[in-house]
Length: 125
Image (cartoon, rainbow, N blue to C red; front, side):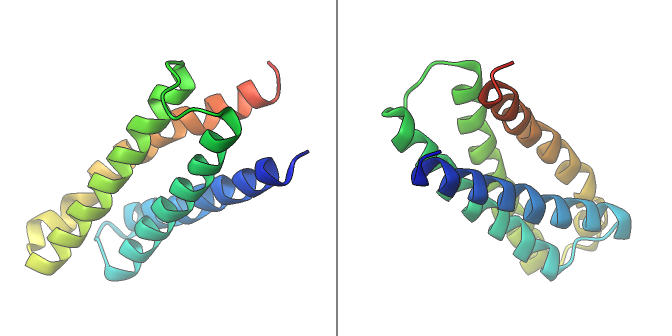
């Protein structure tokens, strides 16, 4: 296994752990809190680092594969999610703070599609 592949696997799995903690903790508490935001941003950063390493291994950012396209979409929606969560907390809009977890779970499910497809494709299935 190459160093680049190991690096990308570590960061993508770290992203999964961090992002999942943020999303599911928020879901359980049913209220967006600042510490959830830290997990959203940390997961996004780790996923971006891991995905960038994968692009470097693949030799191209513009692969028109299911995994490549869903991966790019997932990073963009994670970015939107983190920005929106930041905006909601800064505005202190209690209605949005209490309902944000519904959007978070949807984003997490979308993010899991390239995560799982990468694991399946990487395993050779």
